[in-house]
Image 1: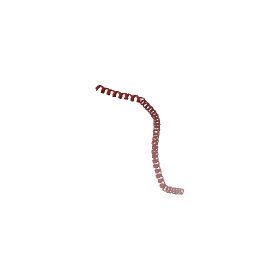
Image 2: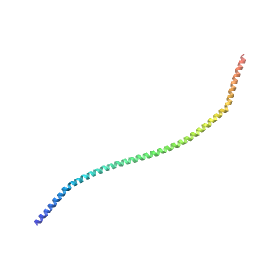
Image 3: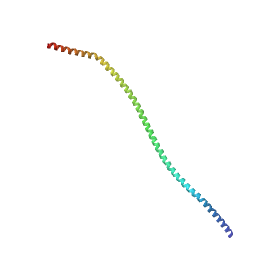
Image 4: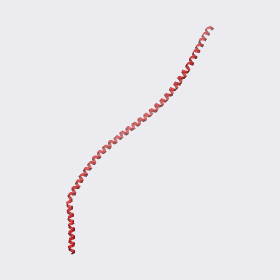
Length: 141
C-alpha cells in the first residue's frame, strides 16, 4: 500500500511538474493575450469615439444640406417672382411707351393745327402794332 501511494505520489508530482512547465510556457502567451486584448479594447474605444464624432459631423452636414436646399428653393421662388415681375414691368413699359408716342403724335398734330392761327395772330398783332405806330406818327405831325 505504501508502494502504491509512493507511485501515486510520484505520478502526481510528475503531473504537477508537467502542469507547472505548461503554466510557465503559457504565461507569456497569456500576458501577450492580455496586452492584445487591452490594445483591442483601446482601439474599439477610439473607433467608437470616432464613430460618434463622424455621426455628429454627418448630422451637421445633413442639417446644412437641408438648410441649403431650403435656401435654394426660396431663392428659386424669388428668382421666378422677379422674372415674372420683370415681364409685367416690361409689358407696362411697352404700353407706356406706346401711350407716350400717341401723345407725342397728338401734340404734334395739335401744334400743326394751331400753327397757322398763331402765325396769323402774330401777323395781325404785328400789323396792328405797325399801324398804331404809323397812326401816332401821323397825329403827331
